View (spheres, one colour):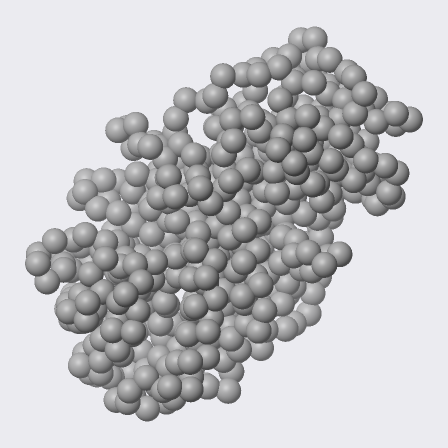
Length: 510
């Protein structure tokens, strides 16, 4: 899939993450299946992902992610007993997923996916009492207090409630979590209106949540929870995107800077429609570029979702390996790689560092194949092959060659994980402005008036992209149906890459 090979070439991604302290990941959904926006969550609908451990290992080891969001319903954890203790059997099943996440070395977000409700009643506002909700979180915090890689998302997408009363409820939860001994863990504070970035400030949610404090009066590790979709009604159920959300996130970023606080984008997603590839990439570039206030991002969603799900990020298995789709690689991983190593903030709030010094590039073509062409600027190449599954030994890369129709490749020299690595991207998108928007203008490689052609090819990256769409977003939006984790699929687009094995490339990364 798009960028898949680059990620395999991105040397030592986890070490880089440890340095930049930026949390990037995906929701491993399933425990939330069946949850409706009125807080009803039938136990029979929950589908904890059977291959969740393999997916998370892939996300961390192959993509360099370091945050998994693990949705679960309140009903599941207490076996439908509102005032009861955590159910040993159901908690045990969920904890297996949590422990699989922790085993990867990633941070793991516990997400109660009930929309601030239990079976129709709003918590603390005519439904379950604050004490009942606090009891749930006190028990969870007690269990996970000893691991600082656990993050607590108090509630998924509250809506249609009194935000000031809800803030009081959240304050009680934060106090209980800290009193349970979980003093170092991040806690995400959610506002109303489905936690939408577009209304967090105007609704008063951001101000109300910023008033929530730790028992000692500090706000350490208390961050604003932020969600946003890109379709016509912010529901995450439509294939087409109508906004890139930059204005909405800019508004939140300004609020956070003005108040000296941080936010975490814990849910956002899109389809692989062309409108979404452009808009979602633009949104995520903005979020990454403003990492002084946005400390993390989680894409929706993988886990028990079928890869054909319209917002699907579930990898497919190809030749015994998990392979990610275009949306994941082009709009989540690529912007992160571009900006993720520039997170030492320069004090301006942009989070964008200066590009690395340019290096000469040698373009090589295999014997017997058409010579690739290079544009005068040196930023665009047209290559005969699409490349998959490289093997890496130090800086020596061996790549099986799969012949295809000419593939347009835009070259961008960013601040990569390893300074000896160049980044290349491939896409069926013909608009090169769209392509280059994936990276800041200052990061593009300089002109190369006299490129050198010699015996094999540089490290262009590519591949065939099949981007199905099918299911609506699992309960997180108005009118979302119960999700079974399977559904119809439809092909949205495919890069022009046919497959025929003809040989191998041997590439020296400069």
